[in-house]
Amino acid sequence: MRLVKTDLRGVSATKMMVEARVVRTRMTNNPHFPSPTPTMAELDNAIVVLDDANELALAGSYAAFTAKRLAYEALASILKRLAAYVGAVSGGDELMVMSAGFKLRERSTRLASLEKPQNFTLQRSLDPGKVKLRWKVVRGARIYNVYVRTETGTAYGPWQLIAATSSSRYAATGLTTGQKYAFRMEALGAAGKSPMSEIQICVAA
Image (cartoon, rainbow, N blue to C red; front, side, top):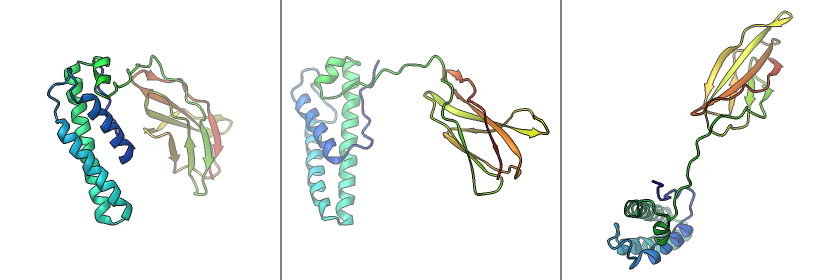
């Protein structure tokens, strides 16, 4: 069953009030949802409180901003609880959910495989023995494995895993100044491992 969309991150107070008023209008006397929880009276009161707090916050006082934040959180909580109610009553029926002024979350699609990491670059740091690595985020990746091998004479030694990070950047430290190193990395996720990135070579500062 698809869930009702409730993500309000980054939504301004003004936009939230607009969305809340749409829900209030759509759910008032809606035969699909005869006993909404919270009630429309609670929703309407939360809208009014946030509207007033939003106006007072224009004065810029700390107390006014605090009141606005609390009113914002209260309205967000009511909308999320109403979304849960709508989801439970509708069973994920899209038309019923839309009739209440909500939307359904997008269907998630599981990736069959991870793409080869792209834009893998190295940057020598001003700090001795340090090299900065960056790459483009791979869709579906949870962890990135970073490997290094060291030039020894006319060849390179074996690849060694030096990091497993969730970030798309990494700083390799403890390198020997003047030594040549080769780096590569791969992405890991629910779809398995990606192909290895291109190999990048640099001399440590």
